[in-house]
Length: 170
Image (cartoon, rainbow, N blue to C red; front, side, top):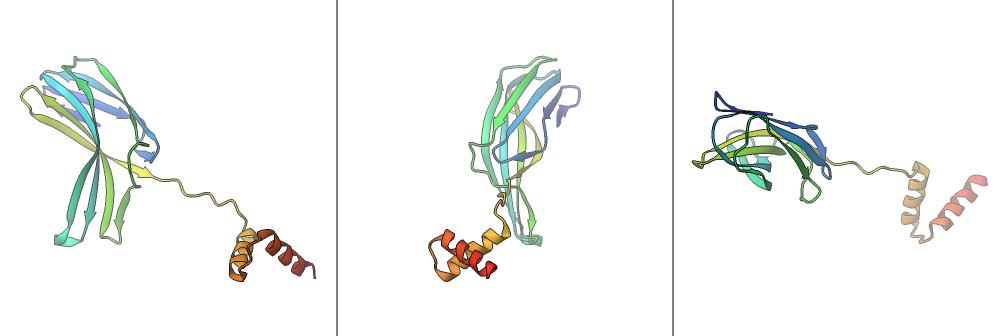
């Protein structure tokens, strides 16, 4: 992601990927290639944007989930600042796009620079958050046995298994 003002400021924000697990860590670096304005401080935000509705009745709601001050003071050309942002401490949900064409949840990294005259310069980049699905390790016959046990009201799964084994052998 690049932030720039012609002949005044040029910054590159490099991060390791664009898709993150909900418990992942965003790792990156900010490089200052050209600095001719007096920056007072810089921050990075995680923004959640929820969209509901269709057509002319679309409603957007933005929430700032996290806000970190990365730098305080004026940077110099050639300087780089490492970024490490842990996602596990926040109540995040997976990215959802156009569910039934009426609802979506998207996340953005927002890099904000504020100069000495309180002007704000920012750049947003969308990131995708995902959640690992549960790994099913039980066989179908084991699941069928549990379902039969629930149906029959039996409280002992070994008894239900031995009954099904006896029926198979006869």
